[in-house]
Figure: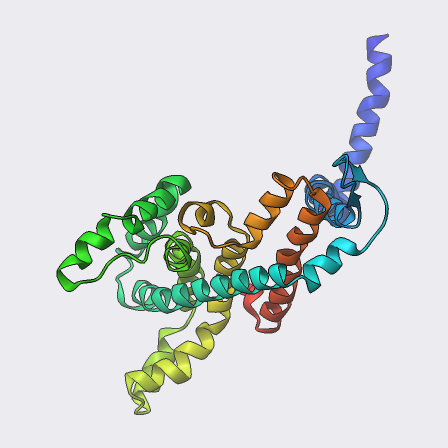
Length: 298
């Protein structure tokens, strides 16, 4: 009887195998079903839950969430001067961190891609990746100790009468620029590595000086790679909370507002509305990056 039951199963298995062999689309659909379900349920579902929660309200007496549809939380985030200033500060710091990383990463990536020998390139890539293997908290607290009273900056600047600015925006920008630096170097390195050396040689043969070759050949072709790197540095800075909490002093960022509204204020719908701000900013940023052709460099 066991053999009689197994025969239909074997036949079904053979028919399914034959169908998958004949149809590449079926194989692709079977391969992508699980990842797409994960993306749809875990990622897009979480974003949908965030949007829905932002449209609810909180009872001011009991603190319970009331599932009453309202746009009040979104209106507060858009019209309240505190939320507007914090949003502008967060976006400004994220943009400044991105610019600093791009300026510092471009020559490093150019050296790795066009100057260093093939033997040294893997070692240089490993050196850039090395800080990522250390704990995020260790690196953030290392910068806190440097900016603190009597820290490394005070010690190094004492002979010149320079002291540490303390915890605040300067410390936040320096810390975030250091943390996300590898995410800017690697896309630029990948973009420059694909740049043919013959273009640089042709520019030199036509009489262009190195500065003009850099402006008219290297930078235009490397720009999509810079934008690709900026997607990482900008988005990571925009949503960071821990580093800001460690070295930011009294400065408020969007991540702090989300935490404060969930914790001390016990207003989860308003926290969800604040959490939508980085999502909207990144959608606009990704749209502009796509127009610049940067997504192909990711």
